[in-house]
Structure formats: structure tokens, C-alpha cells
Amino acid sequence: MGAESMGAGRRHHASNRPARAARRDPTGTTTVLLELGFDGDGLSGVRSAVAAQVAAIPAGRLVDTMMLVAHELASNAVRHGGGSGRLRLWVGGGVLHCRVSDAGPGLAEPASVGRVLPSPSLPGGRGLWIARQMSELRIVSSPSGTTITAMLSL
Image 1 (cartoon, rainbow, N blue to C red):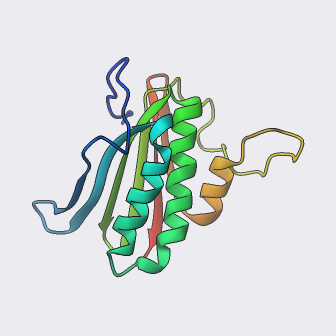
Image 2: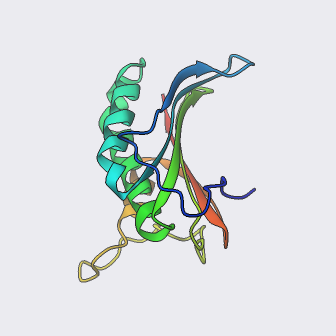
């Protein structure tokens, strides 16, 4: 399983790129709330779009949590994953899912990243730690990109 194809040199802005929202898959067991591409200029749009979609479902109490997790994952994709990414938000099986994919160089040790809080003297490295504290994460990474799925029980 690898990262979703991002297309070389393409830049996505969450604020001006149409997002697909609220549709059921053919089996009726999953509701896709949001799909969008983003880059550094679109991170505020990612937060807004995620907040709006989560607020509209019965799990609205999870708005702040999922908005923060989505922002941390998207920020990491921009900073470490090639400058852009793709976000997908869906509900299925009693779980709210947020998947962020990028086409960056991948993570050396995906199973261990974000498990230990970095030293306060380090300028970064807290994004995946924060996401792990607030959600269950699944990370798939290779030299062609990383896909991280955060899950929150409804």
C-alpha cells in the first residue's frame, strides 16, 4: 500500500479547489465527508473545511479534536512531504477517519514517529506526537510518499 498519487509539480489550495463532500459509497457503510488537495497556502482552508464537515454530523463534539489532528497532519505533509497533500475525511464503522497523503520522501521509522514528546529545545517534531495523543494513527510510508490515517471513535 503506498501513498496516493499527487502529480509532480502540481499545487493544491484548499481554499480554491473544489472539495467533494458528503456522499455514500456504493455499499452504504461509509460516508465520505470531504476530499481535497492542499498546499501551504491552503492550510487554513483545510481547518475550516474539516470543522464544517465534522460539525454537520452527529459527532459534532469531535470538531476541535479532528480539526487539530487534520491540521497537524496537513502541516507535516506541507513541511516534510513535498509541499502539498491530499486529505480525505469519512465516517465508517462508527469511526471518524481523516487520511492525509503526500508524495514526500517517506518516514524512516513510521511505527515509532510521534511516540515520544520531543525535547522543548527542538524547534519542531510535535505534530505527530499531538496527533497520536488525540487519535489512533495508521501510518504507511515509502520513498514515494506517506499516508497517515487518524481515527476517532464516534
